[in-house]
Length: 281
Image (cartoon, rainbow, N blue to C red; front, top):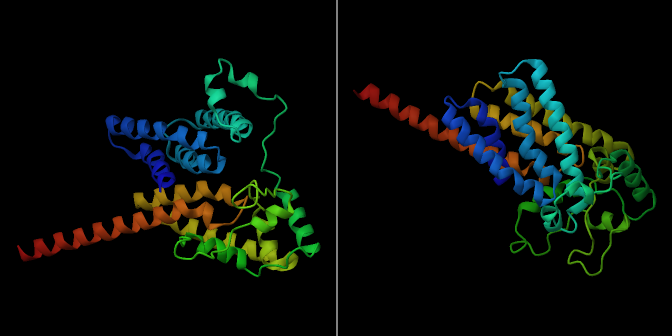
């Protein structure tokens, strides 16, 4: 919910009618961003910042050349910021924040990790070929869909991706879950683990096609500001789906959609009440 609200604030900056409210929305948005960066999860930070960037490119009042320059600067800043996150998310940012020259603590040859989805697809193929586990036939997608159910209600709720992480060498007997971390299998790799090497890419393609159709529908409804903001949030989350098609990525847009529907229902009832009042008068 916090991710969705922050992204909403970033989009709404460009639709405020007065400078005062534009500054208020921008200030709250900027104050919220360090939480996502210091959290150590780059995907969450992208989900918060990308709707702002996309909205600026589409609705900003600056010339196209300026927009492209701002986009280039934003890319460099994100790349350098994520290098810091990659270097310190396992140990914490206390030493980094206390250092006078933070970048001296980062290896110059450090590269972004988690972007090797083609390599992960090869691992997914090898995982099935080794006989360690058969295709889940949609079971992994279903487990992610049901993950919202609290474990207090469902004590035997399946863990997500633990078996694959152990096979990838991330097992840790001292960890509560048994692994150091889980592994993002990639959009196609997740389909392969669910439906095998033949039907897996087809299943992943169908899911992405349905998601794209939903984005197109919300874009067609952009005359409504809440729907436009919903589209921007969903578009920002689309980049994270490349690492895994999972509801764990899409929770912000789920909460945002429920919020938008509540607004639409409330405003429609309010409008109908006003019309009835005018008719009675």
